[in-house]
Length: 176
Image (cartoon, rainbow, N blue to C red; front, side):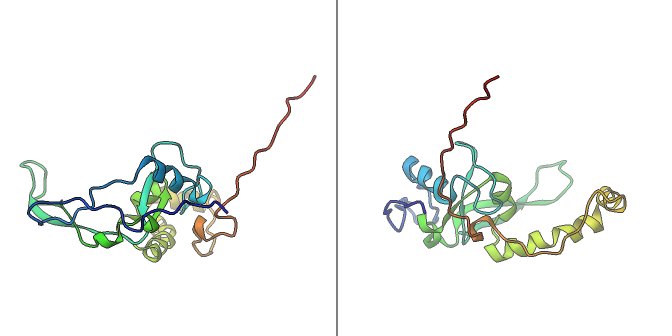
């Protein structure tokens, strides 16, 4: 098991003069980010893909949930109003290092403000949604290119192999 260093429970909060926002502006340090990336052996906590040095996300396992407001949409956009992030965080107390998991961008963007169980439920509904809304999926299924498997959604961090102990294996080149 990879040992993480003792880190402060709460990240330092940014002071906002008028107190109207509770935005966790402080980012984790480079050292904390490096440790977080290796929490599950350099893999995404959800799908298990290998995370590159850059381009992965630090996901709030329990979402901090950001507030939004509806504003008038730009003229010609085809809609009257759009949702805009106000910057206010509804649960700033959840912005802690313990509440962060390393995640690939697709998993974190899919998860959004879902809890882990909410994300699990959404993923479990994807096959039926694809079958309902995608003629391509139905065609592939009809020709045997896609086979539906009824099994539970299990995240990488729930497997017995996570967190990993990485091993180095020496490989000698073929001598011909």
